[in-house]
Length: 244
Image (cartoon, rainbow, N blue to C red; front, side, top):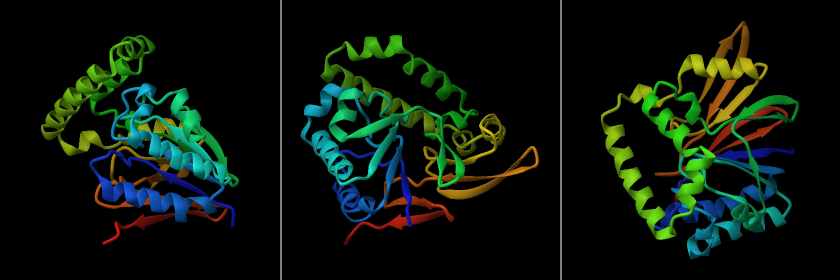
């Protein structure tokens, strides 16, 4: 049956070889049977700019995606909070199409809203303020104009600050806000919603203005991996385990 796959929050990086191998197996064994693969943000642990494509690890990941695209599977990529600087050069190398966040699609007859998910975590006001700053074209132009090594050092510093800040935040403010989810569903005609970011994989049902809406949260790929498979009959979550 024709189907599409959804993944997010892989956070791929050279220091996690087991997860990189799990992704390679997924790309070789599972993804080629799908009509489309949707990567809903944080494909990389961080992305300092497309001039980092020269890095062997980044080039290898782009090649894996390109080989999948050449096999006939369409690849769609959405920016996450870690890799929002992915640009045209990486997309060309990977054979991927960039999706804006949010994007509403017709998924086998079911209206489906795709998001990374970070904008749904509206209770985390400090993060939303930071997100607005770094997503501005002016900030990105200034940042990308600095040398690559300096960018990477700045990102590492920001990541350490972020981890320290998370340790002092209540867990609930880093999850989605129910009212914000309802606003998104209402604004897009009460669709199904698929997103990542929170690392809390689950299927939720929301009632908004008397309409029942399904929400799928995708898993992260830290200790293991997983994906959502959707076809005309609906969606099913699948887990992936690291080989011994």
